[in-house]
Every structure is written in structure tokens, then in C-alpha cells.
Image (cartoon, rainbow, N blue to C red):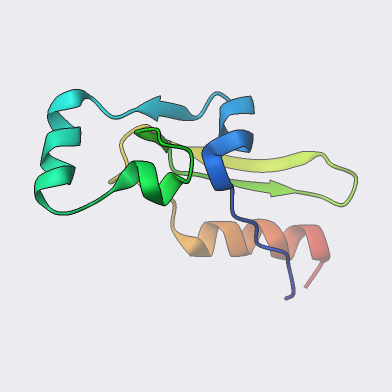
Length: 91
């Protein structure tokens, strides 16, 4: 299968889907102690992170599947996404 994978610099798209949150100050301090400079990594000076989400959007722009969970430890199995893609492509 071939597909396009995109990265959302500055969380602009995630913001449009309502999938962005600001890291609480206590966690910001923990990140800083570990040397994680999220504002620099974001490139916009913010402590914002996207909620992990996976969208399958067809060529007509229709969302065919979505998995999103505010608990970053709950991630959909890649096999679920592959199955959706196979159904869409008939492969």
C-alpha cells in the first residue's frame, strides 16, 4: 500500500479538530528537568500537545475511520488502520 503521511507543525490541523491541549505547569516543569524543550520543538513557543489521533481520509476528503483518545497510552493497533485501508482499496 502506498499512502501519504503528514506532520502537523504547530498543531494547526489538530487545533481545527479540537485535539490540542496545553501541558499543565507541573508537567512543564518535569519536561524541563528532563531537558525537553517542547516550545522549541513545537516551533511556536507553546506547551501545547496534540491528543494522539489517527484519521483515514479517502480521496474525496471523507473521514472513513478515526481513533482518538486523550490518554496517550491508549493507541489503536496499526493492524486496525491497515484493515480500514484494505477495505477502502479492496486489497
